[in-house]
Image 1: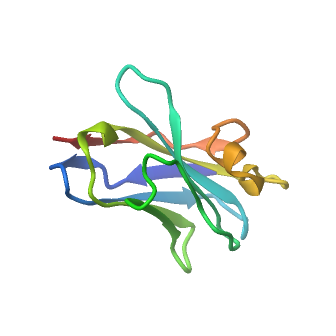
Image 2 (image 1 turned 60 degrees about the vertical axis):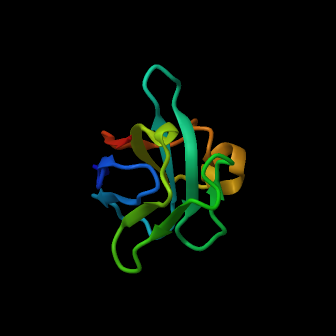
Length: 130
């Protein structure tokens, strides 16, 4: 049974940095798509970044390009979201999601950032920027 667990959220001042982690357990796949999403208070969930861990240029939402980086651990089933120069509008619950059924949603940016088609979601980690 695949489980995704996010961590690394917290409170940070504007201009600061955070690193979110998404650890996958019960995972027997070497290649899969991992996405990061966020849901600000009172708003809909939106895609932030996505990556196909077998090697592919990652996708980013326009709102985070140049500030956020999605990356993967070399030996563990862990994907990170490195958030630099965070702003109050980045305040949200952040979720990771995985899709391992070929073809994965990482085939296109729209699919990777569109939330539909992911097989499993984590429980979320809160990020608050003041």
